Image 1 (spheres, rainbow, N blue to C red):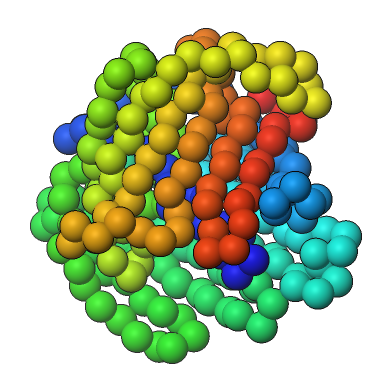
Image 2: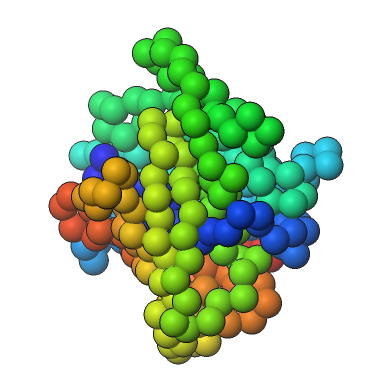
Length: 238
């Protein structure tokens, strides 16, 4: 359960430049039920709001019920992106059982570098990035600006403040799925993370995005070291 929020690392797609983020509905709030191996585990919220001339993306995940009784989770991730969709600033604050993490990163695409800081360990560092780099959260919204065609394979990079991951995304098929909100026509997408050629043990995910122009993530599943996490859309104010 330590990596409940890791689903965000499985996210998607790449190109040298992102399509305009202005295609998103702003403001937007999407609410999800979180299940771990079939058991109700918590709730998650994805939000988009304006911040000056930029957009602020926010993801919160909180455990509930039985899971919260033995492994409390309270995670918050934020990303500030330009109207063109490129990440400028990333912050994560994780409280998962006894585990704590507070990290930040600033992106410089002119110098192709990311400056990050671990606020708890008080470690600062600078890492090289590519022109197709996103953070854990901004990559989710990147996919929503892409016209998904089954058979596509797309490549990009994710910087999570610790390392630069290479991601291969495959648009698998169109599929009708049923949720508490009803049936949705979706496009199924899988992502695989690699670092120096080695496949990530956790964080590889499958997404179901609505087939319309908004491409709302209706369902997300992610393999963990133990079990599988599933997020299912249950509400919001799009």
